[in-house]
Length: 153
Image (cartoon, rainbow, N blue to C red; front, top):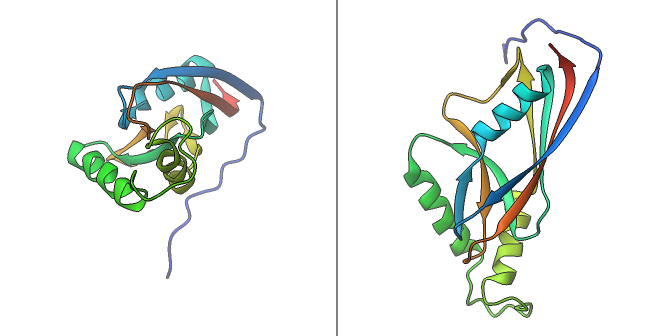
């Protein structure tokens, strides 16, 4: 038997709530935004539905990754640098040698996420967190649009 499906719950989509989260980065690396996402769902009164996140940039991305061991995020930066190194002979370098590699890293990791909300809680796994990935070397201010779609309390 391939798997077991829980009982299906249906509810009308009664609410669309939105906000913008501004995140100051320190340069290349990952910023945990899980707590801010939880606070948004709580402020929206979200009970059952979907949290959508979208970063408004082409050189930063969003990802769900392990939240227990920070070495994972260090290794992910190393892996992305290997996939899109600064000295690869890129043509586009309008904002410096990290400009085009940042665009490639965003292409690989994505600018949006969808996280189910069940019983008022993000349905993340035990060791999962939501991260903004900054792909540029210098600090930036990044905007993440948050939307909750679904049933409220």
